[in-house]
Length: 336
Image (tube, rainbow, N blue to C red):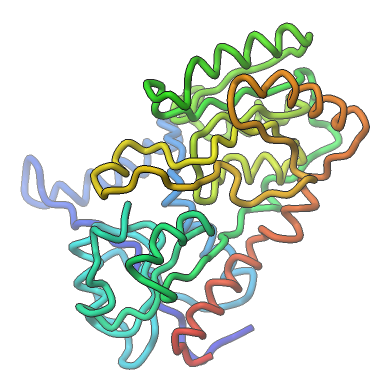
């Protein structure tokens, strides 16, 4: 699929300035590139939004231009603003028709005049529960975009050593909330009681800071226990599904971020597994449910009832995610 002109994408950052001597920002940038393999800092979810979209566009044969600064696109072309500081995104959005998101706002109140102060056409959210939170302000201009994941890179292998029953993935962010209530310790105790071996990994604290350490641990495990209050997409668990690893997921059901109170939002329905069906695994809501749901999960696992990679290949391939984005651009007026 080829187009007469590339699509324009923006993942904007504030320009770096010199720190010690004039022009040293360029030297620091090159040094960071050289040190990156040693530091191994895993990319965040917002970085993967851009990376995975580009990979998907490449698979579709669609030309693109990715801009990191506030630059003007060709006259009359609808473009996409993926991520960046709101102040810079506001500057770009005023230039012309665009779709905005998902990596910009925590709440629609932060940019309530998006559609009156700019010719933006849509606000993009990753899943239904997030879209529902934005609709009271943005109405039907909120659109849902499920991103693709690198299903070829994260593919199971017959040589994967399945030495452990579970990888415990700890992404619990707000341990002082009633939703938590010693959840991790309860789950660990129940796994031990059930005779299940496990590995443990903490979000943001991968061994040596390298993301591939997480995937290496996944390949050693038959299943994953995923502990996260909420996700709008959840690349880590999506990649586990792609690797053929079924998941026992904590799905509390409400948005737990304490910042929600700053926007007058208290009881917001949410999920930690927005892209999911019965092939992916089993979920539970509170610690008291875990023992029973663990038993159900193990029974289904032993009976071979899970097929998580099939779900990914049907719904979350890179090319599918990119095509969904192109469709949104087209709907917003892109010359397809």
